[in-house]
Length: 263
Image (cartoon, rainbow, N blue to C red):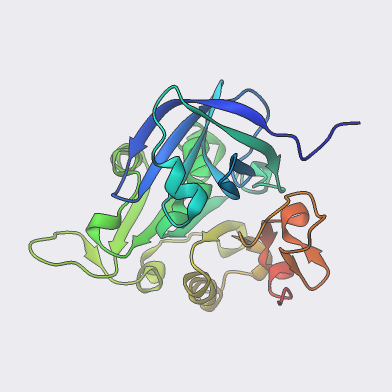
């Protein structure tokens, strides 16, 4: 019987710095992974924490990690060639079959761009399989923008609205909350739209409301509830909302189900 708690040690292949506190660690890994999956990342003596996959390659996966605690603070001291322990993938992830042939909209806030980056990469590489694609992404400030190089690539062929909550000086981009730009997204057929929303809880709440006001049906909206996923296999109960284990049935939910989940 496979022991789901046993981690494997993975080597750091590359480290990409986005901001002072957010780095992407490219890790050696072979196996089936979907956007939206997460792994439990651990360092002996420091602990373990859940991290979503932000990139998927033939022999690697990416974790985009913010320094916010004991484990992640220590991770940021690691260098290429070092390794740490991972176990997973866990969760349901995003099923791209739900989005093929549709007008796909991804709305992300801050580090919420990381778990949906895999969706954007797949659509960018297979554009003929999707009717249309829009990315709406917001950050607190220009200094907080993640994946700047990837955004330049996506902007060449995809429709991208990038905004920041506030900016100083001569910043030339959009300023305002993500919700302010929902109306700017062109939708040809509201019955053939798939909207994916990931970000801080309040951003998700009001962005969902904004799309519902535009006439997008609940069953055409997906969200990801990444929260308190300690064991990853439905044993500890820390992530449970009502009788739903987020680490097993989620973290990706159709909004028609997600709207019924409460702590």
